[in-house]
Image (cartoon, rainbow, N blue to C red; front, top):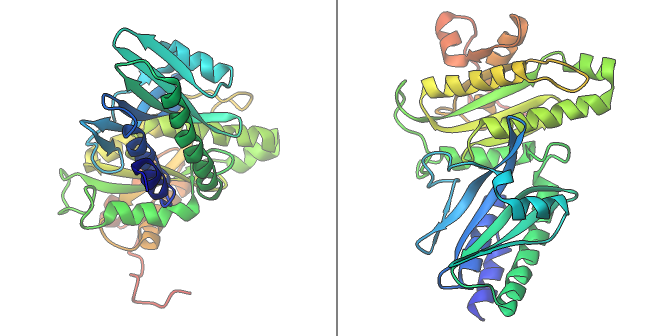
Length: 337
């Protein structure tokens, strides 16, 4: 079997987006000696479409925000990439920029009528016809397989990860051998955090303005979530107006600041027709317990926020020390059905 076919076989053996993405980048690296590749994602920030790398090559190896990236890679403005901007506007399959000693090919990843990201391939020499044909063939296999994963793992309305993918992502970041795995607890120690986010009075939005406007609010909140958190974090829609964030490798202070910043961002955002809305947030460390237990703690903090004024961020462990919530029954002390 040729190396390129072997890589294609390995690529289609993955069952999650990021590993599939890293695999296609590794496959593309086999097609040129001086080639660099990146997987970019698009998101909104301050009414602009932004671009940031989610996976990229470095010295022939593919680095992913799943594990190796210590912080969010540099973000840029899509408008500064005119060839790609025009390609997205015209719904083209590829965009090309040629300059002395640098030639870049962009391949947008379309999900129905939306492009959430693209693959970027750069090399010093112009792309040959044969090289482009092989690249397009690999990319089409990748995009077809990506679509299958999207159908089963993405929320159809917002494009965020759906609830059934949560436990796998949770297990990956809390595994002892993970680069993001558990560490000794402490306020200044980077940890992993889980937040449950709920849109306040969302039922009134649907009742007063209708479900079309309600859906638009959900989509816009999802966009704010993408822009507010890093590429290495994970954002899920759990259903209805509830979202979950897995925040990686952050101190308690930075986690609290990140969630408060998002709460403030939503409060200051003007939603078409609706005006202003707010969110309530409960968060906790993922240090101890199964996913259902950690979710339960964050839910307790969220419920307290909803019952005591809404539009606020509550930290479970602090509330527990104040007696504002009670310790849940630990998993294993009771049979769960």
